[in-house]
Image 1 (spheres, helix red, strand yellow):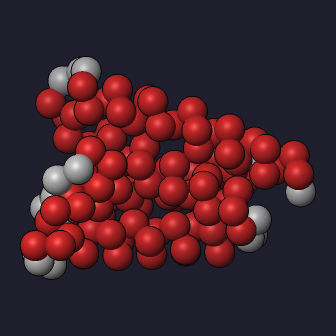
Image 2 (image 1 turned 90 degrees about the vertical axis):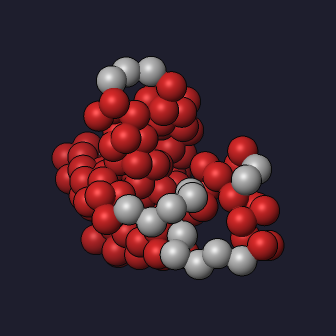
Length: 120
């Protein structure tokens, strides 16, 4: 179990700079979609590290978390918008709801799920 946790946190940490770079470099498609896919993958591996659940349960929790964050973007109050306008708050909470983000989260979580089933 320790080996799985170490691999999980390593993958999650490695995905952070790759995801941030995807927002800065590349074509428009990469900027719009790849960052969301990598964010969801990072959430999956972070949950796998923190909770060490079976892969299906980890995927369920990660996808639920990602979807809740996305749907929270429909809510706008001064206090949460102030958080969103910080660098970290914007990265975690996002700014505006997009249906395409939900598809990206599905790809990121299930890609991680299948990748994990094959090797971690």
